[in-house]
Image: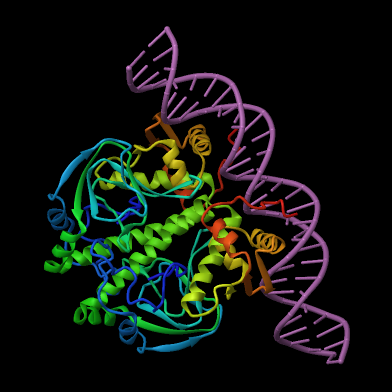
Length: 249
Length: 249
DNA sequence: CGTATAGTTGATTAGTATCAACGCTAGTGG
DNA sequence: CCACTAGCGTTGATACTAATCAACTATACG
């Protein structure tokens, strides 16, 4: 299940979309603790940064879960152009396959603790525990919703809006992990951010600098961002690009 | 389930990704005929073109199936910028919801014959027929894969490549419906195409004209395209933009 | 201390958007 | 039957955002 991750919670709510009768995701009543119990302890390994786990089109034997670290999921064009379709972090699953092949490539961003689940055993597990299937379904729906949000970003947002969206998404994630909303860690490189947002490295860098000059963020180091103007950033992320687009110079 | 549609078959194969043991989609053995039998005859209505079926965020009461016609699914930004996240055609389902609310808006493109399934009864159906849940899961995974392909298109492809991708996708769909591969019908307006591909109307129009001048397509009328240089178009769609980017003038 | 890599900044270009005009077709009413 | 109007699509001129090309800085590593 390829995570676009920024859109989904790891373990706070039992299952965010199980409330109300007219919901689609058909979530089981399996909470995340139980889910993790089923899914985590199977096979753990530590993998260095920048390790390719699989390529798009490889035979899909395993579903992966991240115990710690970060992974990027991407697709390539023939000439090397790359689109990162999502980052997976602690607690996320990835390894979506269709017709027995991975639909994207996966590479670690940092050193990562991974659990691998052979699809065969997963299918067995699901037969004995139908709620597991529902849970997987639920996670897939969440991913799909996140993917649709990313389409809006890639198709219709400016560079400023895209970067603001990323920062707000990572901030939300930080909160869900019990960290302060204003302190965002960027484990991935500028190149990864660019390929996720459909921009170039240079545009990402310039936009960070713009935000810094406008007092929206501080950048103690390239892997750390402090959100100062959270309101403005949120506005940008929601598509109100009324601010400094160049006027900051 | 919002269809990006261009990536998925309607009823030829029983379930395309059920082959092989190491597949993810956990497809049931329910074939599409059976699926349609369960899902189609519930409530059919005919809806004129340009009818809004629901808005993003509306309470999600129904899942929709298209008997005939076409529907566009889209998201909006506050200032009106629109991203069409998919078109649904005959045989497709749409109406994906999360937390009881639709994740996107839906509007008919042409006069459309629709079936509506209250989510409540769908849940009941699924309890008596677990294969139905698997089927829904399967369809959702396919949609997700299509969404990821669209991310690559929106983030990294040129206008020419995007339009070529659309044409190839519609051509594939035509073949699956038993129509010739080279005859593509465009029921949607140029504005819809633009909002699907992350371009403007003008760029879409100009790119059509380019393709025409290059002899790749013929355009008997704005709603009909004949693919002539299918090889070149396919190449473009796969990211080999080595052709006439302006040299055609 | 030298080298490699990542990130930033600057100058220029290019691709697409924007603004504007025009043509075509369909529907309307005289 | 034909002028009028409205909507969609096409084409042209120009503007602008982000890409490209290039140089420079900072940090990590041997």
